[in-house]
Image 1 (cartoon, rainbow, N blue to C red):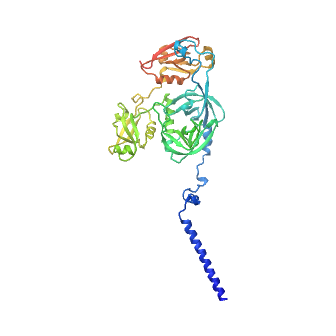
Image 2: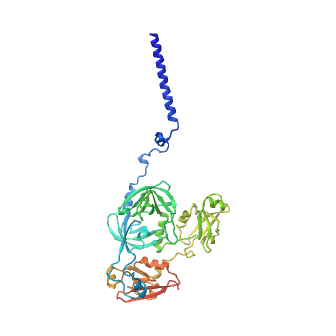
Image 3: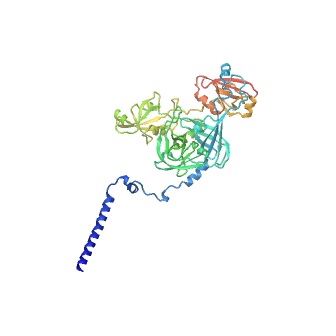
Length: 491
């Protein structure tokens, strides 16, 4: 009996020892390093790489911003005349000049059109709409469809190829609109909504975060391109162009313009013109008819490690001045080549895009304070910004010089007069047209041998014309009388 007790006690001790050994082994095994191929990497990823999900209450509520935005974002459809038409006849042009000087225009062949689509944002109750320049550029007809399915024909107030922003207007009142937000206070990781009409799917809302700011991606082809895009991961596709980028408060912080894609469809990144640029462009177009672009008069580049070492700049910061123009604002203020611009009115700049965005907020004649590093020392300069002509005055709208109000002629008048296009003079005041002898009712068909089918065509010809060279205006009166006029923008 005693032997049995001893055996049982020994077995119990052995069993307990085995249990303890197993526990110790298991603990050591869990704490040891393992290969992902063993299947423990998922546990490690969960424990150390994936943060716990935030409670739903901590995520931003975007429903009110979305509801407000869809009523203020419109669907834009455009009709663009295709290149090559009834009068693209080289033999005809050889004998009579382009379209034939003082010859009846047109024939029975109907012009061909192609359709385009995009988005726009209502920015006040009176029907002003901001969109992209590339959405309405070279269009013959712009139709705006509101979220409640009402349709309007829009007219172009102005456009700016350098920022890809345009302003159009519809004849409507008491519209729902978005107010401008402050794009400069946007933070990386902040939630935003992209609202537009991708693939003609109207009133589409997508959400994402701000993934970068002040992006220059080289897609704007204007004479003085200005790019400082907000980059987001909100899904944007063709048709979203000109639509709204709004913050969680429902404020307009950007105008969606482009996507980074190898397929033409969304691949993860989209870009919007920041409100800091778009708002100023819109205000200029409303007030002056064209953008009042302020310039520093410098050639600049980003500061990188190689430049910092070769030019002994020390810290990698600011924007490097490679050259100053002879009559530019910067040189007149005392800024020199090899200076590094650190801040504009206290706002730090570390890239060319950031500096351009800061300067873009101002007009010619405005003064800005630049913080500049020279030979390791900080200096302050007050710079009076200049316009594209090199002075500090506001540039007068080119169309105002003509002294007239214009309107494209109707299809009925085109058929009656046998012309393909034209813009009629509705009334005249003091200006170049009246001085040249033009009468009310005159239909401008060509300027400097360029066909005219819209007021934007007139602006484009004037913007490209030399002030010292004569401008040839050809056209027809409603009576059928063909004639022409010649004048200079500056005598």
